[in-house]
Image 1 (spheres, rainbow, N blue to C red):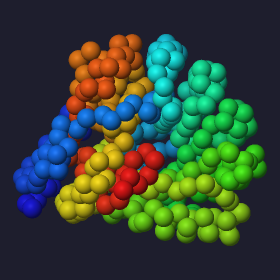
Image 2: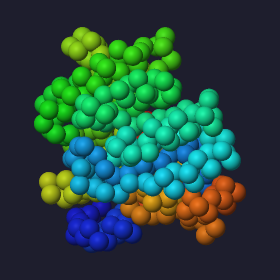
Image 3: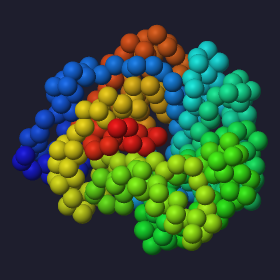
Image 4: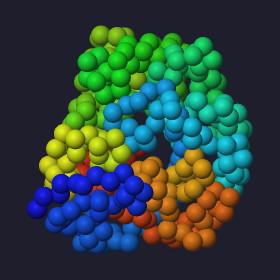
Length: 346
């Protein structure tokens, strides 16, 4: 493989497939999928409705593919959320997955969660909570009770069970605040296997390498957090960092880009490719546009469906028949044990 060294151009990332690179000599992801009979890649079922409620966040994490932060003003409007509710009424999604930024910072967050719960009492509602938001402002201190009352499943990033590694990725003092927030969630029943209140943690590698075994990391995280902090949780999800946004900038700045991309390509797993999350998920951007996944959303690679590219034009039949938009960044979801918003896939 020749050098994959990038000439970084942030403007070019709007149509990004790693074609911003010079001197590429690698099998494109489309070709790789064609070799195993998965191109064009088609949906299998629309089960998960994922909604980015805005890019505003109280943290600025180094690995964040959303480029979220306190200075981001993009927030999903009430009107767009109403369109989302109409879609939820018309479909049988088993999961509504709320992301950000910090989704809780959307002023309509609680109203929306309560509305979804009224529409479908049995639907799984996931909130991707960064934990520190619970302590960021007194108006968020009751979030654990709100989550419990609405039977919300909480998924939270915790890079490691030590302060040094967590703070290096997510900011000074984040580990201590995260532990306090986890204890607040534990106090209302989250993480207790008998409560039915699900608390899952997410592990992202802190550098240019693939996650270790999800099962082995889960055992280690549970023991360390229980013994050191008295924290319990249900499952650990390992997610591979995709070469986009802030993590791409880190790879280029640290001169790890070539090696990381080669690692992703060499670790391509056909079994993981079969189970990529875009096959049963639709991702909605803060402005209502539709994407095959959260990563494509950040690259502005909208769904390939002429009749349904925005929530106001939702056409479930057309979306079920679409070709999923692929790029070389997709190698991140198919390397090793695979990666999705729900962790390993193979």
